[in-house]
Length: 84
Length: 485
Image (cartoon, rainbow over all chains, first blue to last red; front, side, top):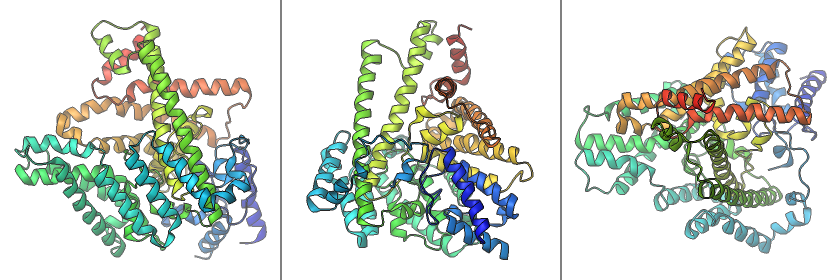
């Protein structure tokens, strides 16, 4: 994933975390959802964001939260979907 | 658990005095032998408040072995879990089997022994189902594990319904149904995990079914093996921090337990406030309590229920953390909820996760993709309403035997109504949040939010009260009478 795209996704999460009064830094490997740092509602918001921004069709995917649990995993996931 | 986990619902301003898990000297000391022993002794004393000393000692010893002996974790978890199940059973399975045993002429049979045999039978069945789902990836079981389990549960229920089978076959199938029911959602999580590339061994999977830290409910607190292996402390330092948090949570559970006892004395012994069930009974018999007593009864019932759920969740999560699982709390400051969706998330995190995993996500990914708000509302409704109703009906499947199918369904109308209203409220709250609506964070705004959220939960509690003694109509009339209507 290019840096601009990754930065945009980071900003998406930093804004969501800020709304949850979470000012902790966000590293590329930090767990977002499995750790409970963000809830399932935030996850759905992000899924809708991915559908809208990247045209990813989640109905065709055996969805597992681990696919999008960290910035690095999101990077791999988007690349695999775009190249598919 | 790291700091970020505790900040998930906005708890950035952690109370520094209580944040002993952030003190490096303590974290280092807990990694030494004297530190480990002191921590385990404290954990034992905390658990001994609610458990018999033998069970508390066994639990702490098993958790310590699990934490400090990583190469044997699957074996330790499996053995400890089933030693707990066999030596310290909680009796609900025996009770459910006893009625059918007597009815079929096997009153002299030990229902305890029968439940043990049924549990062993269930373990082999579960093991077989896991293997089948793993090797037959295109099978209905692997693709639709929840639907398949519901079909198995329904089939067992039909076969054991009065008049279909008789004698020993009915008793055996009924015993299997009674054992399957409390393990239903644990098995569902394990079946889903069979799709994972890095799935856990069968021994570990089976060890997470009502694990030794698991409590008596049917909600898999800590979810399944997939979640647990991801949350396991990776380094000695992480382990020490997690265990300090474990003891903190256990002590907090003890404090809440003391508070609950004090409030129980205050409401029930000192002021003689009746339970909601008794108050409805009195109302039906035209001996209704005074309005202020009815309101006190309802408020106390909600407080008592909330404390019970919190305390139980804290003991379970505290115990799991002692083994090294960095699990988020089951209940997290529910009084700070500013919306219904936030309340749902904070009050019973793992129940909400179960509904999300098995009902919300499948719905969300399949329907109304072109209509984001309808999509969100409908998926939320399927989870908080339909999923909630199915979960509770499955948990209380033994009522079909004791009350008959029509009786069980009739007594369930009230809870179904509760699910309908709750799901609608949460769905609207979800859609409003997705539209950017945020409650005011001012002091007055927070007070308003508190009364809206907890007012809704309190009024709805009349319909979710766990007793099956009253019909929907009786409860509705009682609610109206509380407003002098």
